[in-house]
Amino acid sequence: MSQFRDLFEYNRWANALVLEGTGRLTAEALAAPMPELGGSTRGLLEHLERVQANFFGILTGAGRPPRVEGRTYEQVAAALRQSDDDFLAAIPSFEDRLDDTVEIAWFKRSFSVGQCLVQVATHSVQHRAGISAGIARGGIEPRDLDYIIWLAEFR
Image 1: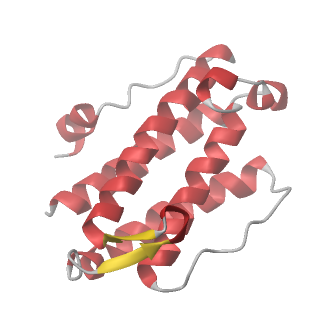
Image 2: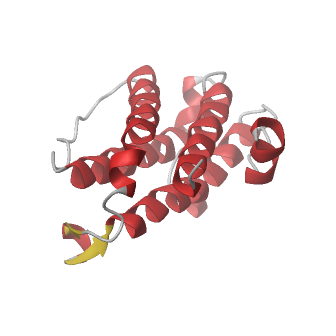
């Protein structure tokens, strides 16, 4: 088992846990502003999904997918699940190219495929924390998302 495979299996597990929590929130709780965390729970979830989709498109050569406005919560959740599955399926091909570089337009520079994979995994951790705060504010106990808990349970 590779370290990247582990990271992206963990990422899928942790994303599934926050989707379990957000799926129980009311529309009002999902939309409640959390400016200190960068947006609403739904906004953070959509941002997490968009970043994963953007990096996946860049790493595969397909390019960034077009931004689709007005998606429902269910569409965002389904897209995040699909992104998690896509990354896991592509890890072997990404690992064959870890030192290759790709251009990340919004930074106006190139990064290695390996650096991009680490970015996706660590970026997701940041926003899941904000989403978990939104879950708690919505009156639902958020799940513990520690990597070591995933390891203890699945490895």
